[in-house]
Length: 372
Image (cartoon, rainbow, N blue to C red; front, side):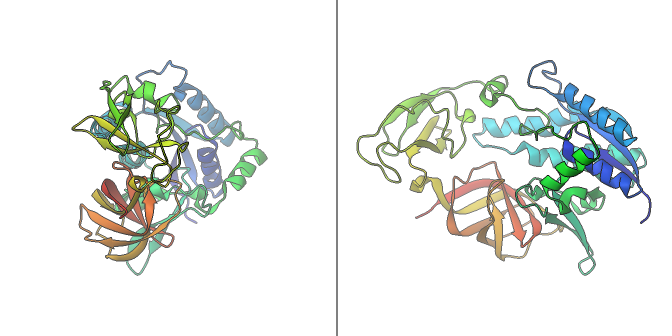
């Protein structure tokens, strides 16, 4: 193997730490970079960047590699967070991790690494990259640990970005990564995985969003058109949401479609013009089922739209692949029709396409059509 200078994004977590260790074991020259991308409330209890940097520096010390602290806060705010807020204000539910990977980790970070003389960058994502000699293209593959696969979040990467990316954990299971971390006595071996907004951390989400988006209260209506409560602003709700509706104590008179008298309430529709939140009772209510969707802002890993036909798709992370038919694929848009209705297909989220273990790309869900 040719020894390369590889820059690893060290987050302070166990995945990126083991990534750096594995590459160093292979004989590469490894340099760590810690990305700071959020500054608005850096002294709050929820922003863990200072703690994370201490953890990342401790890992670098144990591994015997350099680490550099780089601030991408302005890029993050301009390229990711501004779009994140625009989407919420339009009533959609964006996925900031998808945009963050495309704009920060594999653009701003990649550019910085190349300036440092790196030949490749590496992250702790559970995914794989393969060069296909027949098509002369790089392919993005699912991670072998199905419960941790993160190809969904990487579907906007281009051929140029994939050609410079390494994902050493893609062939490992999380349990093996934890075992390696403990075996080599990494200081963060038992650190729990983060689950918050990309780079912003874990915090009460509605309280956080309220700093940037004004509350505009309006009626909550059920599927019979009856007003049964008041919402705080449509931006603060997402389709399929069950918690935090403020109507948990209400019981409908008589059983409704999709659920009985005591069935829980779910957000089913958002009418931005009328500022009305529509809710239904029962997980299987028809309003929560969609058999087709339209996507926009498409991104194709091969550099050109996928061929129409049968494939699989995810309309949200941690969802099993669903059989579907791709139609009308263009550079910017595509349509999907599902063999079985999908639950709470949400505008703003990503619809990501797969041919077996190969991720083909995806797009932002623009609209979904209820099952008939």
